[in-house]
Image 1 (cartoon, rainbow, N blue to C red):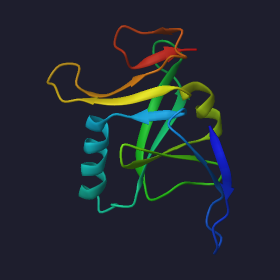
Image 2: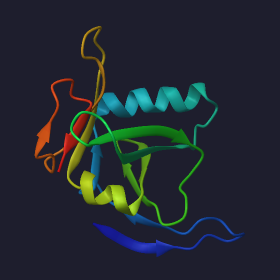
Image 3: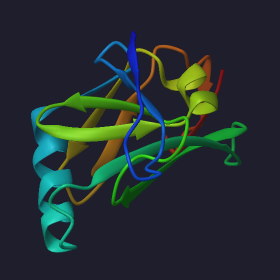
Length: 128
């Protein structure tokens, strides 16, 4: 899942390079993330996917657009976009697929996570 450790010059963050076994992005999600990054003027930016405590079932996903990876992140290129995951969140998202559904009801980003033991009825949180 992880390749070589990358050390960038000039004090840039150290991060590792992973692959789609960590997280895979569907074409629909990649298109949406790409358009959001372009709209924010961050064409070379990344999508951060994290797992934080909260929600009905104890854990929930947090997604954010950022300029690049931070120290200790795992960087995955999937669907033409770059996704970063911190090491703690990687324990929960390994094998997941990020999709985007363009619909009025139940639309938006969806994470299909094989590690989720249960999820709440709203689909916004899970337990592992």
